[in-house]
Length: 354
Image (cartoon, rainbow, N blue to C red):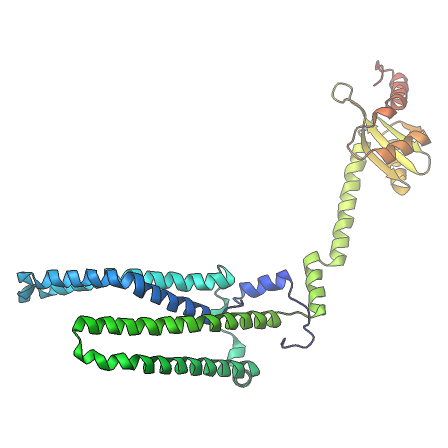
């Protein structure tokens, strides 16, 4: 169960990520043990015969060599023996290492975290230490380990009792037969414990995952706080948006000062257009606004002596059909062309329209 009764909600992805960064994952120690036992059994079955043949052949070779009996060369012989043993045992070590790593990766993926090794002051607190020792979780772990030991001991007892019948007959057989029988006994024992460890590992992993999920549960307040942190402080977000609006307004008003005409509904709408005949296919909306923004557009236009034309239907149509930096729609070309032509004529410029 979760330590805090208020923590009833499943962990969020961010909480899981944080727990993983701290090295907290669902991990069973029994899965690597089961995988290692199976690996040892497979090594005995497939690799041991090859390694034994290689070792016997090497010993035959060095003992049949007359130089072996020369005392001054004994160190060379020992070096060769150690080397061949190392070469034969290296694959075993590598295979077991890979099995151990793969068994952990299969549970929680690739994880490299040094936080679990960092010293924590609460671990030095004797009261906290006693609470951990006498907690329900510790008691459960103790009972689980005692149960595993009891089952393993019972299976070992019955296996040894069964195998003792053949052990007493080993006295009358050759050394090779004795070695074969010992290897057979060892294989049976390893396979039995490997098969036993599989269901134990599965049950233990399921429990570890359940316990992990319970431990990382969150309260509703924690989830709300996390969402607030992820989304940002509402006051800060509002201030940022306000600043963005102000910057956008400043840029838009700067465009008004470079426009060719501002078409307005006297009170509610204002749209500023720019048209460069040689570079544009149609007039473009560079600023638009409603109510107080429209009023500000008209003020900037007056300050820079930009023509202001009252045409309520056209102003409303431009405001509703065009976004900033968009060309005006084709159905409004004619009306805008007449306005621009009148402005150019008034300026005395020789432009014939759109």
